[in-house]
Image (cartoon, rainbow, N blue to C red; front, side):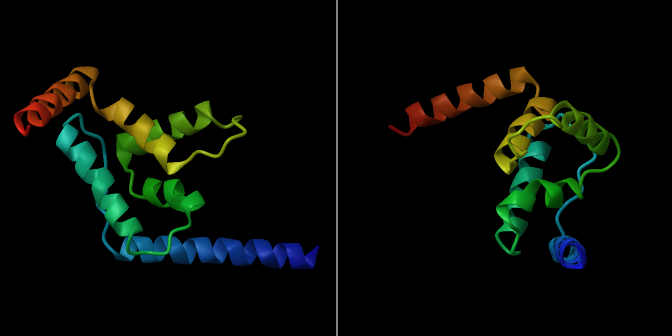
Length: 124
């Protein structure tokens, strides 16, 4: 029993240290936006920090959500509640998908696809 408590405390401490190291690299906070550039830039910025800090794959969502503020954090809590009974872990890929679903209107996504297709055809 005491060994389990010590191991749990050590895990908590390493998570706290990891989040501190993550935040020390200056990831951008996100409060919410429907501007697709803001959304993509935030994700890219978070991933850039992930590449510089030893962030376990299973902790990426935990680290990233420390940077959500105001409405974005409230929306994250609602998203988390929807999945609290899931057996699968909530991965970074799943987070990005839900995040983009929330903050990038469908029309914007369609326009981005069309722009990409035009770009791809123009480069042939």
